[in-house]
Image (cartoon, rainbow, N blue to C red; front, side, top):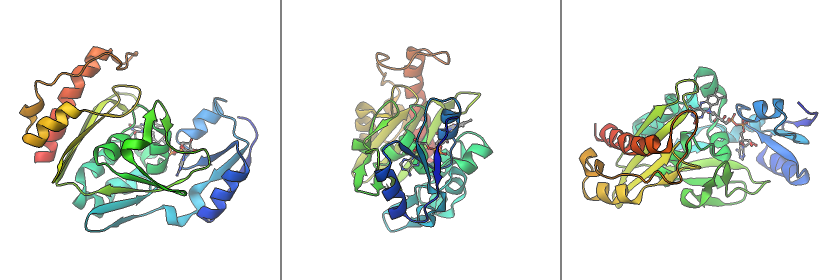
Length: 265
Ligand SMILES: Cc1cc2nc3c(=O)[nH]c(=O)nc-3n(C[C@H](O)[C@H](O)[C@H](O)COP(=O)(O)OP(=O)(O)OC[C@H]3O[C@@H](n4cnc5c(N)ncnc54)[C@H](O)[C@@H]3O)c2cc1C
């Protein structure tokens, strides 16, 4: 690991000032991705700005229409939250299936969404729910946030503070896990709202994406059978040591059907 300066600001303004003043600084959340990346010397930030001292970034609140989750809230807290379990149980279920207990206790919602790993679970929920990413500078709709492989709309000095998730009428998440990491080989998040259904898929391609044909079919009839015949084109999907693109394409339909079943229970 290369040398770096370590900072632990106590306020969002302090963290924002540090990343603005140091263009090669990196924010640290739970360190689940950043620390291994630095140990392998794939990242060499001049400064680490640890968000762990900013209490305002942790916690879960609810209003009539939204559940708001602080960026530094660990996965285990989301999974165990009575608010999330009551209002968006699919999101609590998704969080409970991330990695292992150590990852769930250190990894954070903001770190996962900022990192935008193509196989991460949270991006499917954030896009599937049509959530809003709240940052130190602005609010970004999920549809404009995820730009591709490890790429987001965040500016280098922008800090995610919270994610605002609309409460759906029903939602479900199903993933086919890679056995070693439990990352999604393919995961599908389906959310039903009064004005239609959203379907977001992770793991299958270079980044999370929606499936309009499934959204239209499910908006007409929210049943697994409505999407059983919808095939996903394998062109552009990922082929790697874990699975070929055509297998992933097949899994998208299977996982989306299971997500609808889970949502309908
Ligand atoms: C063994 C293992 C198994 C895993 N399995 C899964 C899995 O099954 N499913 C899954 O979805 N994920 C999985 N993960 C990923 C994990 O859940 C974390 O979400 C992910 O590693 C990010 O970790 P972190 O929150 O600690 O962020 P960090 O590693 O601290 O940061 C990650 C990146 O996000 C940036 N960042 C962090 N917070 C913010 C913020 N608030 N605003 C802006 N940028 C920010 C950092 O600068 C850094 O670039 C796994 C990880 C490991 C190590």
